[in-house]
Length: 81
Image (cartoon, rainbow, N blue to C red; front, side, top):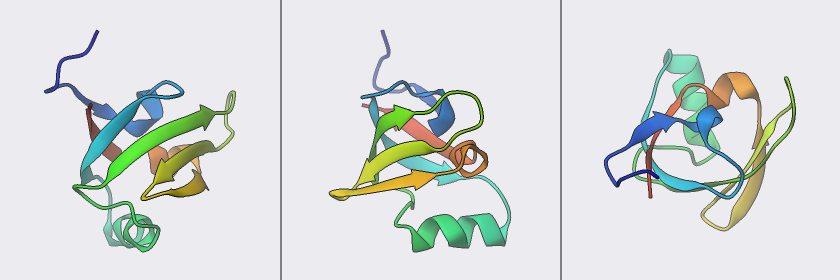
């Protein structure tokens, strides 16, 4: 069980888990790409489905559903809700 101060990278969340984006790790290109998708600090995020092995991670933010690559998902630090 997680307490409210637990932080982890998005790729480590299980299907159905939610959190708040704390920070985006990486260079300007990755940060801009994620911000363009609405993935910025303070945004609530939910993992809908992680595909096996190297497939994308399906997420929901602000009522929209997106699929992002595992590389990008590994750059997003979230605080568990």
